[in-house]
Amino acid sequence: MVYQALYRKWRPRTFDSVVGQTAITNTLKNAILRHTVSHAFLFAGPRGTGKTSCAKIFAKALNCTNLQDGEPCNECANCRAADQGSMPDIMEIDAASNNGVDEIRNIRDKVKYAPTQGKYKVYIIDEVHMLSIGAFNALLKTLEEPPEHVVFILATTELQKVPATIISRTQRYNFKRISAKDLIDRMKYILNEEKIAYEEPALEVIAQVADGGMRDALSILDQLLSYETNQVSYQDALEITGFADQEKVEAILAALLAQDSGQALSQAEAVLADGASPKNILDEIIDLATQALLAVKTKKATSHFVTENFAATLAKAPADRFFQIIDQANAALNDLRYTNQQKIPLEVFLVKASQAAPTTEAAPAAPSNQPELQKLQKQLNDLTKTVEQLVAQPANQLGNGINLIDDPRPKTSPKAAAEPVSAAPVRKRKKKTKRDDKKLQEQVFHVLEHATKADRAKILDIWDDLKSKFKVSDQAFLNILNPITASSSEVLLSCEYEYWFEEASGNANLLDQVEQELGIFTKQNYKIVIVPKSKWLELRDAFIKDHRSALMQKKQAQAAIPEAEQAPNAADSQKEQEVIDKAKEMFGDAVNIKDE
Image (tube, rainbow, N blue to C red):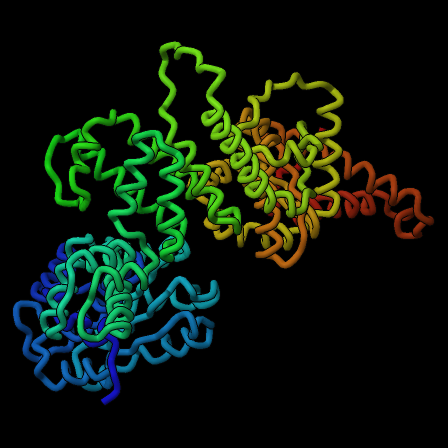
């Protein structure tokens, strides 16, 4: 018999067997019992948290001929067919590979037909965020007013990519990450049923790696069983997942609290030699320091530690030390994203974290005859500079074609470029001059002279998706920048607040990333021009007036046209209309032309 993966073999078949989503499963059962089933549902949440399983159970329950308190009986012909994937009235569609307009139109054409075997026709569309814009639009009307016998269940791991018009037509259920305890309990149940021995610390490692996903946890468990079929051991779990032995991580934390950089580096080197990654070590230090902080603050005993007398060692450390270590470890994790030399941010963290946090009181001067301390300080400085240079490399490789109005980005030397953005000195707001205003006008006019309605529509169409590629803090900044118009090579952005317009001039790294993402989305290169919203209307009106005058002069300079001589008023009207048409092409239909 062909082997079946654990996550498939032990996929829940009833609502009660779904782990960690009690509120959602109870709501779905009550909807069936009370006959208040909506026409469309949206299941959103992290991967492996039960979205597709709940969708299948719900579809099966809707067509079950022998319901048991809102649960499918799993014995009638419809339930058996649903479990085998042969129920004709339950259609599962993978939007990742069926994301075109034609597939959705095919669904729209077939929903009018009555179910052949059950009470409802149920369409389960998995990874619905992968549908194209055209496919979403084709689905809208059907999703809003489907026939009474049709139910849509949409599932997605990226809710932000689903259009608001789709979300508003569904009942939305947010699936949460499954707790480590629930993951461990479920794995224990499965292993007991499979009659496989296990060590509980191994299950704790798997639960930590799975990060709230049941499917991930069972996949790792499957991998361990392939490695050693007779049992699930702690050492095997460490080797398979790349996690560090907790006892060794506790030794690293103890060395940091004792301000022993050499011991911390030595222990980390040993853990790396065992196969753990720098990211896993930092993750485990953060988790362990958090547990230690809670143990110290609450003064409660915990079984989380494995080293003898480790709790007593923690009790001697002030709470501020744990906060310091957690913050510095998080910063090191962030640095890992920007370098291929993964070991260096870990070593920098270990040296920094082994030094006590500075106090407000004046510390006594260190004796000058401490060569060991001076050696460590030099090592710290060298490692810090190396990391900063590595972090800055991706930004240096990007194009620098962004054009910021009123405060152009300064030319930086390689040394200055290597400094983190957060370390840049606070810029003083410079006083604006007439020259600045003139330059502002010239740059805006240059964009508007070549702008078209089609280019503007292209940028507006991808702007929200582009913003979703950035972290939350950067999205907050981008939310105050709005595309006004665009040409084939430039995009004009309006900044909501003049103060932040000035701050944008110093955020070169972020704007470089925006320009790069524009190139990825549109397959062409753009320069960005930013204008304060407070000045935009004034500049737009000035451009229209200037453009109208220039166009009329150009027309008058051309060779004489008989129709113009016979009907000058008509020719002038035509010129005026050309100006208005050009303005509408660039700015849309909301253009109000006023004669002075």
